[in-house]
Image (cartoon, rainbow, N blue to C red; front, side, top):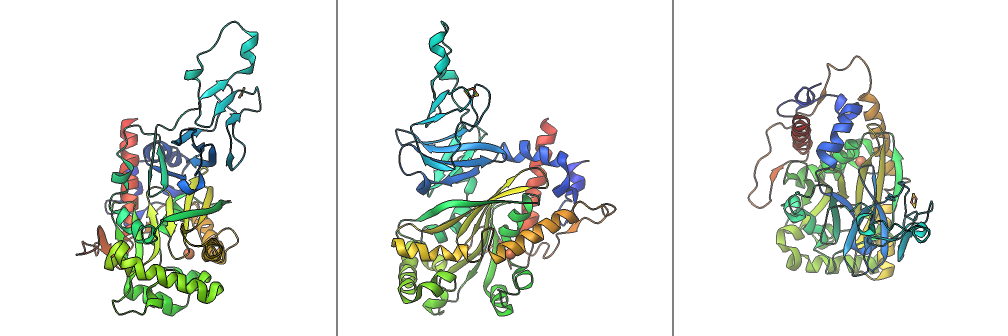
Length: 426
Ligand code: FES
Ligand SMILES: [Fe+2]
């Protein structure tokens, strides 16, 4: 199986095997997950020395922590003695991670501190060489913490590139940025990791069909009218609306059409109008009029602006995903307003959200479709809008209407090229 047989030149035809093959999955680990910046968590989750949360880099369990001197640390959650996980809690604050098997203990930044058996022996192993395996690169941007196993990877800010323009349209419109509220929802889906990613990267085209019970046709028509998709770097993308200059503030303001505004009534609506009133000053006129839909950061981080949630699609083999999903709120909003704004996420998304369930069901069925026999000569058609994207005078990246599937083609071109490079190198 050659990689070029799976994704054709312009990525308008993509083989079903890309989602179902075990061999491709193994190659993805080396070609993509060992070489990319992978999202670990947000600084608001680990504010104080000793704070930690669990994370994953593909299938590798990670402890993300704030060390005693305040630095960000990411270590593989596996004892250097016999491999057990040394941290069992999802999140917390501690001075030591203690392995349950023989009680070796590690500092919160991963150094090996004590070996209880040592006192009975005359030899003393060099503890400084026996700390937890450190993720060699950890960087954060706007509080978003990423790690990479590739020591030589480009700086995170360069990796994000112009995607920062679109992320900041949301993050930077709030005076204190954003905060991740509470622990993530975590659940498994019988699907390939790229299916949620592609959906959140730019597929706003299914809204009024798959989610017909919730999303009226008129809302979809507005998206078609005012919507854009931008790809800043292949694999990174943003779908959003630009509201007309004379649109009323209630149409323009973030969150006004979501559950928080409905449940919170006048107090929350006033807060949202206030945020909007400062938006042009904070992010400029164009981005103040931007209402985001879905975003993706290569390879597996998604942001759902309309329901304010960050999500990571953690692979668990070609046919399983562990999906992590966090509610996000403005960091400086009053506490009781944050709780109401969180319903923007929890009312429709998360494992019990009606939109999430419809999407999850689709991803499972897509995965089944990618596994059926006797259909290998029918690759999936990714050619809608082929070549219709181009530069835009004010928006960075390649830009087009939301019905153009170029965001997915660009993802798969990068994916194909990275797999090919890794295959050539092995
Ligand atoms: S396996 Fe961790 S102390 Fe032995
Ligand atoms: Fe959906």
